Amino acid sequence: MATERIILGIDPGTTIMGYGVICATGTKVEMVALGVLKLNKYDDHPLRLKIIFDRMIGLIESYKPDELAIEAPFFGKNVQSMLKLGRAQGVAIAAALSRSIPIFEYSPRKIKQSVTGKGAASKEQVAAMLMRLLNIKELPETQDATDGLAAAMCHYFQQGKPEAGAKFTGWKSFLAANPGRQV
Image (cartoon, rainbow, N blue to C red):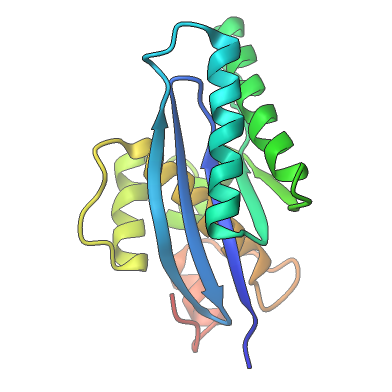
């Protein structure tokens, strides 16, 4: 009997935090939840961090994830934005650690590559591929939610490889190496 794993994916942010939850049973995966936490109505940055922590605890208690996959902050030119994003990511990680949930961090490029086969894919391409993979009928209004879901799917793909260290150049090579794999 296949083991069930719940993976919570997070796209950290101090304005909007996206999240997605998937349930993986063997080679089958399905979406459980998808959403965002909107923080732009709060002016106080420490208050935003507290809300992120509280919401993360709520997500953890609701979905009881076995693992957390989180997008790593990307290096931009605006140092203040990067610091704020890093704080949001740290608070989300702290919430998961407070419940002894293992943390896995992936770069934005790695997430896009895992989901679409291309590290330079657009947010729209990632969302479209997630719709196909998970049979999603309607996308949320913001792509931050699908970015969180993409982090969870990236972790699923990275942990579920049949061969350790296998490298795939895209979906065709992945499917050729895994003929019975269902997503």
